[in-house]
Structure formats: C-alpha cells, structure tokens
Image (cartoon, rainbow, N blue to C red; front, side, top):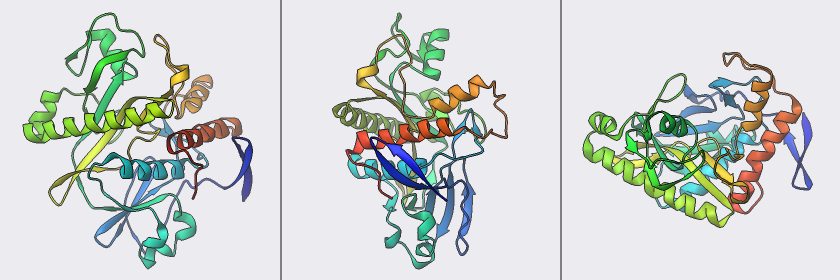
Length: 308
C-alpha cells in the first residue's frame, strides 16, 4: 500500500514501514530493537527496520524512512570520518545473489559488513551536559567519576569533550561506568585506544555538524575487533545514537529539541504509558512528525534528500 508523505514542500511516495524482516535462504543471526542480522558467507548483513523503541519498548507501528535514514547516514559517516570501519557496501546490487533476490525489501536499509568481535562496552563522548550526565552531575558534580566545574546548567557546553563509557545492557538502559572500571575489564591499552578513538570521532563529527548549523551534543559508538584491528562497528552518528540540536535553537538552561523520537516520548507521556511492553500504536501525526525529523537530520547533514 502506498501513501503520500509531505516533506519540505514536496511529496515523497512511501510504502508501509518495514517492521519485520524474513529473508528465506539467509541464516538469521540475531534481532535487536531496530536491526535484524543475517549471515552471508564470511560477512554479515545488517538490515535496519523502521521499528522505533522508546523507554526501551518497541512501538506497535514503524516510522516511514527511519531505517533508510539510519542506514544511509551511517554509510555517509563511515566514508567521512577516516576511521577503520566494518562497512563493505550498502548497495544491494553489489551483494551476493542470495541477498539480491530480496532487493525490494533491502534496498536502502541493508549494509554488508565484516564480522567483528564487539567489545562489551558502549563508548560515549559528551560535549554538553544533558541526559543521564545531567542527572549524575546534579547528584555528584561528576560524570563517570570525571569532576566537572560547579555551576553548570542543563545543556551547558563542557570545558572539553569527555569520555563516559557504559555497560551494554541486554535489556533496559545501559549503565554508566568509570574509565578505570572499563580499563580493568578490557585492559589499559585497549581502553586508552577506545577512549582516544571515541573522542577523535566525536570531535570530527561535531566540527562537521557545526558547518551545517547543528550541534552534536553527544554520541554513542561501538567498536569491535576485525582481524585483530580495533574497528568502528554498528551505526555511527545517527539520530538514534547521537543527540543533535539546531544551533539556532540552542541555549543553556533548557533541553533543546533534538532530531530523534522526542515526539514519541512526549506522546507516550501524554497517555501515561507504563513503559512496559507491548508498545501502543502511534497516531498518524506522531508518526509523520517523527519521520520528518529523521528526514530533516539526513538532509541537513548530507546536503541531499534521501534516496533508497
């Protein structure tokens, strides 16, 4: 079924959002809140669906174009950052025949990647005081045992970007940990390398975003080992893994609007959602506004409209 989707003064034609993905002939490896992973020979196929989770609950209906935005933005950043990464291609026509037979479902939302052994930590860089970091600062004056100056306000720019790792939670929220805890888990040399890579990628991304009228407030990265080399994996600098603000809307003391699922969170709060599965069906206006935000982030960052 096709529908019209209004975006920046013109109409895009969309299909029903992809919230499930079955690919006969390919071995299914795992499912996440948003992604499905399949094995293709010595590589993995990551399929980014249009599912959306809020408060760690997947909603009943998807967000048009969301999966394509996340996939194509990761492709964009992998090509720009200059860091070793796991991406092989996002072009279905360049993939094997057993993948190509599913081209109608996969086009725009599939990425073929090298297999990696992921590190059991989330690598978070923060340039602004927001989110869980703001709560930690209010309680202790620190984030992940990093002392910060007194008197900072909500959304204050930090004196310099900081690295605040977190554990990977199978369910629920990730939990912030200190760098020393991370170093004891992974070893000091590996922890040092992951910290330095994370801050370097954040600073490159933030500098580029600034040229597009955006602030990159914070980001979450994942790394793994590919043939013994520390490699950037998963998604990178997308609205799901990063907090972007319009420079023109930023000021200290408020939580600036971001390019993610805030419309969904606000709606769920308005209906007093209990934050437990199953997720409710989102109304059309919430779906449309959320889709528009993802598309706007893509347009601002890449300078082009989304293509499948």
